[in-house]
Image 1 (spheres, rainbow, N blue to C red):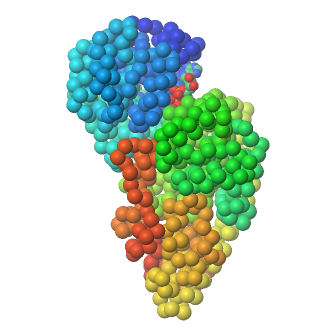
Image 2: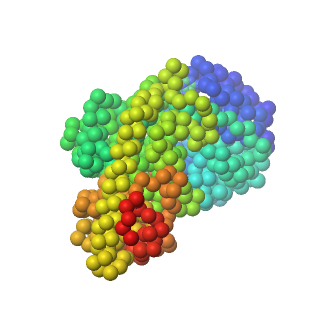
Length: 580
Ligand SMILES: Nc1ncnc2c1ncn2[C@@H]1O[C@H](COP(=O)(O)OP(=O)(O)OP(=O)(O)O)[C@@H](O)[C@H]1O
């Protein structure tokens, strides 16, 4: 049953009555009207751009129900509560929804279009959507004419997760045959052209109207710091740098993103010791603890959260003044989403990214499938001295001639503020990496000459043939356990096993285009973390527990970025010095 022509209320009145907003933001009204006309719609607005209104408002106007499909139950719960707080009838249907609650939802949904007190928003997950009771409800609701639209929130998950580990996302296309004529509205803050195409195809969207705002977040000041040249590069030096950066921001609300749970716990602890009030948040903590941390942060009790990517999706806190990436993010989409949690109120805010070549190389080595190449894109921004804003926008397909333009209200990135300083930093990184590579290569060559060959793990030298991230280590300088631990460890700083091991993962400044994809081979892959699964586990997606790579996994596998031969080493040519 088509929904076109069922407008009852006035969109502006609904916006005022339920949100208290006087006017629509850019593209909101257009998206609402297109949905009400029965068109499929893809909304791409930046983080904090006001996407929720685009799919929450149509059922209010048409007095029917919109089925909202979200990736996370926690996100759905928050949004249901937020909707109820705005006086919008909303409910959630999940695996643990009681029979009584389901019966109540059912009668409310089947009350039909136009019912004053009917349900307006029914939140669910792709997995719940394919269960027989839900399918039966959808069919009945469709026959009653109650369905206004299907909304796919965080729609980039369709293409990012659907093929990876949440096949239920790929079954969303079946809604088109189950409920023909009901429009689909897909919303996301990040969608490159291929991702857009993937969303449209996976959802079976028919001639969709795409409403795409600019990805630019003018109020964010972007900057990058290279770990290799912060003090002596030690963990203490990095911590001191962070603490100094935070000092003038004391009391401001902020988020520090780290890659592992252990890092979150450690960093929150040492920041506390340094007088920074910080809490750790990740999927390893139980739900009440996570809820308490989030609540405390939302209410301003504890201003700083150190978190994995489990924290943030759907959190609507307007006054986050800064976001720090303590370790390099796994993709530019991720970086954009995470840094975009700052400054939703439109006021000036900061994004600070700490990164090293070693981290990027290690992360690249774990990439597989469609994720291959994501780290090279991150590296292109981190390793370059181009306006960060311009580079980030270019990634999303927005070409602009100008760099950060303060005259138009844009915050200046570090490059636009002081390009010379950034170039000096990059030059220092390059020199340091060259020195390290020379030293590593010389030690390896010397060890090989002594023992008569390479690749004999545990006896002589261990040289990563890829030249990427596999620490050049020798017996007596730390051993393979050390290098394996570094791929998943708490700090990603090398662990300081010895003069070579401490910096051994960095073998020359790798130009962005040459950043590797996984070169470890199947044995390595089997033990390595799938970034998608890691994301799912952190995000609390049910049934996505995996066993992280362990030192033993990598240690015992040939081809795990450790053993290699002189030919492989020769072909890569670590640095300018002649060692072979
Ligand atoms: N028309 C409007 N006028 C003023 N404020 C608005 C308007 N629309 C939305 N907002 C506010 O903007 C903020 C962000 O809205 P919303 O949560 O929908 O963003 P979003 O695009 O879903 O962001 P994210 O992708 O980060 O979740 C909210 O505080 C919301 O109340």
